[in-house]
Amino acid sequence: MAHIKVNQEKVTPEIAERLASVCPFGAIVVSEAGLSIEAGCRLCRLCLEADQDGVLTLVEDKPETSVDKSRWQGIAILAECVGNRLHPITLELLGKALEMAAPAGTPVFAVVIGWQVTSAAESLKYYGADKIYVYDDRHLEHFEPLRYAMCAADFIEKVRPSVVMAGATSMGRSLAPRIAARFRTGITADCTGLALRDNGNLVQTRPAFGGNIMAQIVTPHTRPQMCTVRYRVFDAAPRRENPTAQVEVMAVPHGLANVGAQVLDVLAKPEELDISEAEVIVAVGRGVKDEAGLRLAKKLADILGAQLACTRPMVENGRFDPRRQIGLSGRTVKPKLIVTIGVSGAVQFAAGMDKSEYIISINSDPEASIFNISHVGLVGDLYEVLPAFIEKIEREGLVR
Image 1 (cartoon, rainbow, N blue to C red):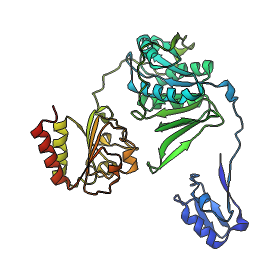
Image 2: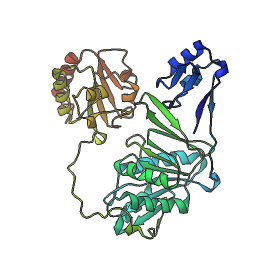
Image 3: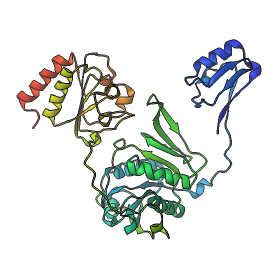
């Protein structure tokens, strides 16, 4: 693991105080013995950027082992099935995999695990993968992490893909870390950006420190490179006229039935709110300061047949359920229409909705960042703009 080394001979009281003030985690401590880097260091490297005197040095530890990367080729996605139907995130993973694979002609694989999932695999043939591997067994009828991980590991050992991608769903978040642990490799969760370098290293981008920075992470010394990807971030692979993939049914690993929990019964869970699936959304921010403003927003949502959503501050002050939050620390949405009311447009919020097909924003501040990504911007007091907006929609029958 990397660490920061201090050259005590170059430390002066002025330099020590300056460097200590830079650290946002209080990990740089000044004492009579000099300057020290404590366990609270997160290697954010701000101190290294501020060091103009050669006091600090980043020491990169060499890995004990390194794999032969030439033996690991291709990009694999772990398909997710709901019953015998593909979850939409499967096609989003495949779309991104195909995009990254295209420049170098890298093969793309899909792995389908479950019971009676052959039809799902057959439908996946039309979306651009080179080969689809299927593990179909009655002991895989219900998602059991250890059994699914056992099948995924069997695939990885036999095919050796360089990259393995899973959805950042409840299933993917449970399955992917177990696979990574088996291969003693790294995994990056909740990625919002992916890029494949010429040397085969995958650059995985994800929000960090509460969404205040975007971290870029690579796994240069181990394979496979693993990540989970947020739903509604990437475009789905389009269906093609003719099938592109071969389907190979794999034998399930020996002893599969004896691992993991034995599922006795499955009870249907009541449908939960999921704004990620909404086609029309009305989102409110801190500019909506009282119940009167919320009532106007709810009325607009009812007229449009929209889901009501919000920014993080509206959740933190207890006015909304966290499941309605849009942004890096909430849900990612891609509706056909989103209307934002009193939303400033901070990067943490914008990253969760900037791929919406059409964005209408209402804000009293003409310099609000939200207008930079909006198709239509209305500047004015929401208590004046919203009633007029609602009246126009109702009068002209703009919504059926």
